[in-house]
Image (cartoon, rainbow, N blue to C red):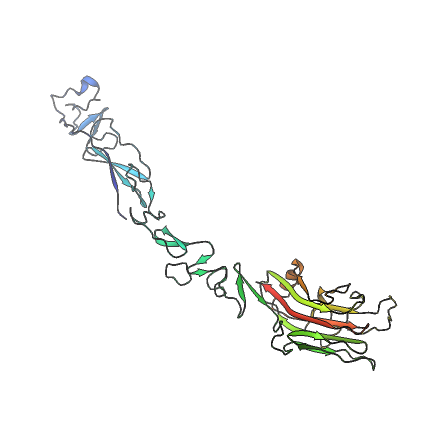
Length: 364
């Protein structure tokens, strides 16, 4: 640290009169700085006190000539003139007789006056005792090369901060990792795996129609009799889920009312054995337990989609489901394996369904 000294005023030379018999100090009470022979003072007497005018901050160069205070500095009297020494960490970089500059935090005077901290890529020069860089919002220096080269809002290897890595294949959106917990949701591969499909065959009237993949979509063809079928995929719930959304495109050709309230399990009731007046058609998407061996009557943990009226008649209908409750539910099951199940109960037949681009994405 360079010590700055401020010379505020150069006082005129003062003749120091040695105290002796010829002194007239008593005539003016000693205020003029004359010597008193009876005092025994070898320097100068000011207000009855013997002072050294060359080094006294209250009488610097003359009696009563005190050295004024300055910002962030302490005063000294050197050779009858006031001088100021900056406090540790401060400097007089403006030439205004004060130690106004904080050398530990001033990017234009870092450590010493005139030392400027340079800007860098996506960052501004800063000072914290030594020069550094303050990155612009959304950027970070993750390589230590004094440049803010990483855009943390969109870099999956540094998502929201250096070293925060999203899972393989996931993206970084607004500093949060976003990815699907399902695989092969667009069905472009032409195969069903890792989805699994089963038919709930209950009696001889059942036609065992399954879900299949064709022309890049998941479909269940119409059966020739009552039928109940599922297709499902198990998925892992990551830690720290912030939000979640289910999206898919849906098309069907059924004109009959749907009855998901009565059809909780994917099984047939073609003759309305419950007596509620419905033919028991249902299409629903739920999250169920992955530990249940029977995928048809596994307890429903979270209902995702269970329409009452026919939807997507003729054309594909985009369905987007984003509810705070879904994110809350998944957070409560962090680190677990769950099952997304698509179920269809076809009592009024024929009834064909097509699904495409199904995705359960999470933000974490």
